[in-house]
Image (cartoon, rainbow, N blue to C red; front, side):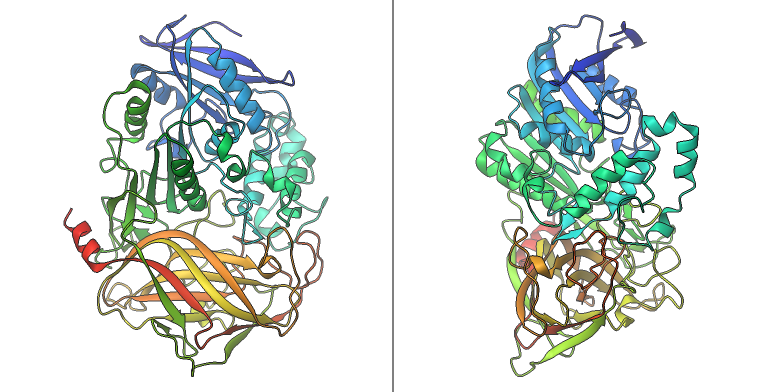
Length: 617
């Protein structure tokens, strides 16, 4: 441990060596108003990205960790920022997610025993730093006082953030590659660094599925091992029930403390935030709060996501609070200092209501506004069913006479390309956000003539007629499908879309993606006990998509796309029924969706009266 370093007249920094239970030293910085400060509450953030490095998700600017810490110190708190095991200056070997429960617990309890801590340690942080919070809470850290979880905190990594519907989220691949490039081992070895720098990651995505020794991470086996371990565990087994990645199994052990959960409509962790909010609010006496914005992962200062602009109300700054630090300070003050008022239980952004024109920045003006609720989904939401018709319609009433099925050939060698959505850390292969569902040269896997996705023969499109009146949707999206296939296993994907009508700015209209989901059919009955398909047999399956909130304006259409791939967001099902990693074969599957009252979409719709009240606020 070194000496105190003065950063300003009222802020000092001290490097800490925090011992983990196995003797590994985890390095952290303590920020305080002066050396040997009086005991007070401590705000802890644990990160794999470098405790002194600024990240865009830290706020507009972005501000440096030092600048943020100084504001918290001025607000009456001490701040500890720590490098996770095997990252930055901390010792040990980095294994994504799985070391964080014990290391986080040990850090909280060590801090609570220092004379500069009053026994209360609150946690905060974005993304991985949110995962680290639920990890330590899963072990019941006694001195945990509050949690501010932004864009993470796995409720179940198997179902959101690492896998979805049994498919593997390939953002884990790009994240692992970039973190390997910034690891201490690689930075210290010029040859190893050159080896990774020479890899063409986009090219490697054309050679999937990968196998050990045949990946861009083959020169850094620690990173290759943990990545392929995640990928190889296709079944929901004990690997996925560990405390660092399965808060759902440990809610009863969570300390009874206030918690705030932030996510966004184009973030992979919507399900995590909504489940943690709901379950902690139900199981604990302490209050839980939920904030859902229109952003991509951690981009709460932006008013756009992808090619869509959500208006001046979209950014956190000036709408939810003055800025991100002020928002956190006020929330911690309300629960640690008993000063000020806590926010409403739920604040969510209802997308839609804009002009539909092109903004000066070249984006669709979709608009939107912030609303409040006491529950999620909002207490006024009512489920409405839309049936899938053989003619491509979405109708409120089924037409049993309109039976039969729609079929297509799904070729895993030619998957449907990912166009935005709930993607993070995917660069340079993919990016999240809202986009017109017509590919161009920006999107991996897209090729001339760049026709709309609904022109593909392997995409089934179901849509309403132009709406006679506004329809506001807020909550989860569920599709019940009657399906059959010629394969032993295959995937079915869904995508909910707001179709803007043609205009002078968008003469072909604008099909804006809202949310999408996937189900690997071997897991249709159980993620723990996969079952192959019997070719030709009809099965009832449920495909879920993460929550959204959108106002479909009169004249727009509600559209649902059904297909069997969404690549590179998810790994491609080879249709062979073999394990996901290492399968060298691909077969074409003929997949069928049976209609005539057998398949439908369920949406949580806000009543007209509720929507009118919201507009008047």
